[in-house]
Amino acid sequence: MNKRLLIIEDDVKNSESLAKHFTKKHWHVDIVDSLTLVKDHLMDDDFCPDVILADLDVSANEMFKNSDELQKVTNFSEWIFTHDPEKDINVDEIDDLAYDILEKPIKHSRLEVAVNRAHRLATINRRLIKSSNTKKQLYQVDSYLGQSEAAKHVRETLSVLAEAPISAVTIVGETGSGKGLAARIIHHCGLNSDGPLIELNCAALPKELLESQLFGHEKGAFTGANERFRGLFEQAHGGTLFLDEIGDMDLDLQAKLLKALEDKKARRIGGEREISFDVQIIAATGVDLGEAMHKGEFRDDLYHRLNVFCVSLPSLSQRKEDLVELVPNIIKEYNSKANKHVTVVTDEVWEQLFNYSWPGNIRELRNVIERSVLLSKDEVLPAKWLQLTETCDIQKEQSNRYQSKNSITIHLDGSMNLDEMDSFIIQTALEQNDYNVSQTSDILGTTRETLRYRIQKYNLKDKVS
Image 1 (cartoon, rainbow, N blue to C red):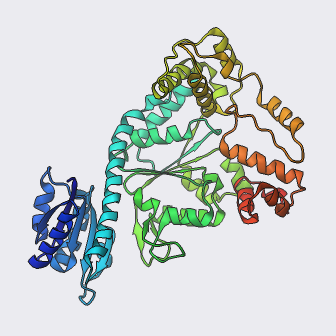
Image 2: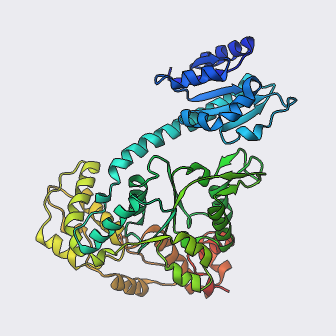
Image 3: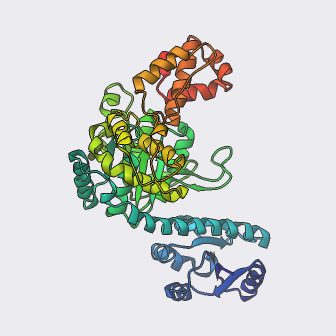
């Protein structure tokens, strides 16, 4: 029995009935009849409830006054409040603390559903905190490997950022150059490391869903909003919000993001009040935001708000000497994952690695090493599975040569990630069909709406009528 429920209720008959019900459902139940006793329980290191079921009719005013303190000491717990709707209690004052607020009378079956959902969320949060502690050890400044001058400069920059209370950082660099790694190092080594790190890829979601993810929504705010959702700004409170591919964000949503950053508060979709938050923003992009700003594709005021400090990451082709340190570390990682024992890198392999241009940067290098380790037969890294004989230009040339009206050739050598493949397929199909969206969507087996979304996502819209 590892599920713990704390009930705050001064009605003995009701509390005993609830305890009996949840005990049968394999919960360990504790009952208190005042907020003072709650504090005593919570100060006990051995007592850490997953869910706290509190009757607001017991001590609402005292609970409102102590909500911030309660939130700190119940960091691992989820609160569910019940109240009599006929009593004059402003439940909004406890909203930030509450997982759910239910009106009496409540059937035990309905209450059980809410408690089980809250328990799932509490379990996830505990795992995230445990994972965060592990990641603090993984994402240190020295995790950015390399002895080149470029790598040393990046580490020096990350060390400075770790000690400074900077509200926003922009990370720029080519696709696969390690922007995600740099963001995690900044968070886990920085002043906000005790708070959560919440990550969001702005290119992965359409505008409406992205807005809901950022700011949250109330139950019933739109079709499919079956329950309240705390936005990522709320979830990242006290920590860091990492917005990857910020350059792909819709202009209208950029305006809302700017207002939220300036005010340090936002309103959930369908909500009536604004919720304050304190987060560090890390924005990453592979596009030139300055150029996008001049083209009118990115707001200049948001650009300047995010660009408090800019970290520019070098491409792998600019620091090839770091391969000497990177390759053995990646081999070691995949040896562990695949139970392989590769320890030897031949001169032939090193020559290919150093002569290749690495258009996909570290991500491509990892893919190449992973494939070679997985297909190895002994302790030697096999040269034949590197597949680095063709340059990116030759690949494109051959791809164009082999393409017909009904075929597209893509080389699966790690030089293109999934988004780049997706963009390449759509671009080629559009060209083959004279940029007719209806005809292209039929050939690709998708809807026009989905195709238009992806055209916008990959900035192909200028060529489509």
